[in-house]
Amino acid sequence: MAKINFSLNELLTIAKANDIKLDRLEDIQVQGNTITVVIATGLPLPKTIKADIEFIDFDNGQAKLELKGNPLVGKFVNMVTLPTGITFNSPHFIIDVNSLIAQKVKGLCIESMTLTDGEFTITTQNTAC
Image (cartoon, rainbow, N blue to C red; front, side, top):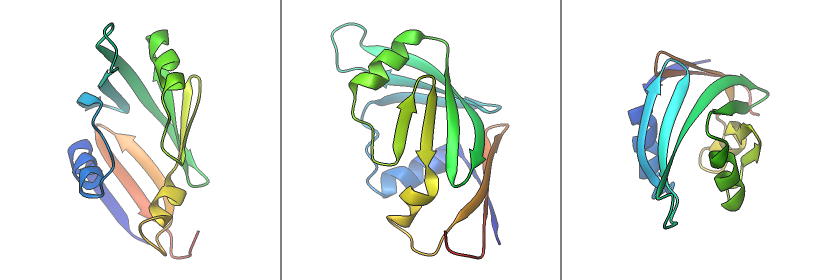
């Protein structure tokens, strides 16, 4: 078992290093357990949409996040194709973290994940998922 702490900026650096496309992401901030993103829509109006996404919990290898505020964001999310391993059932995003990690790293299984005061903490387990 290992515990790893990292910031949102470190997570973005890891994503970019692994060719995870973030081309629509204009801005991202984190406060407490809420992530605020500004996304380019690719449309004439609105050009960007701001969304607050709250980290709810992590269970059974999946992170659950809840979209807060602007209902237009949910409509926009339903218009785009999400990456494999991420689903949206308004107002919740479900991210199959262990499945996504298994595509790149074999033998690593996340047991728990938290987001507190802008810092992610993940705990791995000794057994394969």
